[in-house]
Length: 446
Image (cartoon, rainbow, N blue to C red; front, side, top):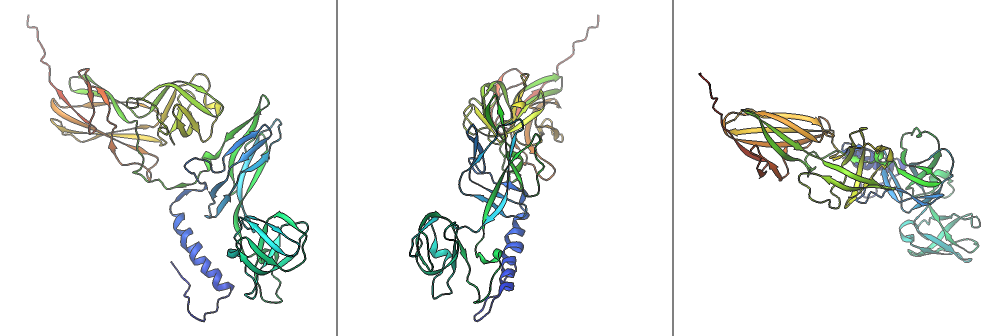
């Protein structure tokens, strides 16, 4: 990384400091992280709560605090929940997030008639400076105390003495103004010495989803059904993602179900990699599974479906699962149009396809066979030609997004399967043995 060379008695002006910032920012951490970031937008925390929109009442929604990253690696930051009023009409309201900055410091303050500024959760010692050390100034965000007040003394983080005449007030925000060369008048945009990451929220009333500009992210669609407010989470398309670590995903459902002998020297493998939802109930913001099946899942534990996809194979719609608490399944973007009454639901990993690799040893030592299919096709049948005798068949799989993003081949889940003799057997180390014996043909010479 390029650097600014510091030494004693070196004079630094704005040009050198701007270059120092460029070395650290543009040519430093931003350059590094841009090579790792796949998409920009809302950062996913463990509770998936960043900038989540929820209904507060029938006319108001709350937008939780959160963090997002723009394509210039600037932060969009909100540190507290914000409420937005919603007007009920024929068109939905779309909540859009974008970046902003603020000069307001943390905490609030009260000013007395004699210039004592008393803060709550403030950090005066970090942002202000008093006499005789080229004192800074304070701008109070007030309708009564509107001047720029010089700092006489910083007592501690919550107490400062200002110079001037004041009207007592409380609950004020404030900004720090820098110390400049005597006689110099900085521009309005330059006089505030600190600039902080912030955010902007827009409530757009439109029948159609708004066309977003660069740096805008859609949070939610808000509409009314039978007079009741409904919030549809739209953040899933705008989550920030680091480039996938191709070996980190563990598919807990990939398993062998059954093997069948089709012909004298052919067997068929039946595998699946998803969870079949047999019956369910749709609630306001979730789906409850009342019955389902996977060969290696005996009960639905918390988080077992986190970041998986729910597919409806009847209409080929899907939605990404944010988490599950027992049989209650929650989504990043809950859309009831996924369900149309004639449903065939399957829960699968968030990849585009799955590839199986079948290897042989023993009597049959032929080259491996590969089979690839779409991830939404849960049931897989693969026919294998085998030589007569005792052979070991090993099955591995990998999950694929594209040619750059896939897992490595790994073993199937340990689970019971039915072998060619209709006997229940346990798959261990992802392989099994099969002994094909040629049957003698009885000829009739009469």
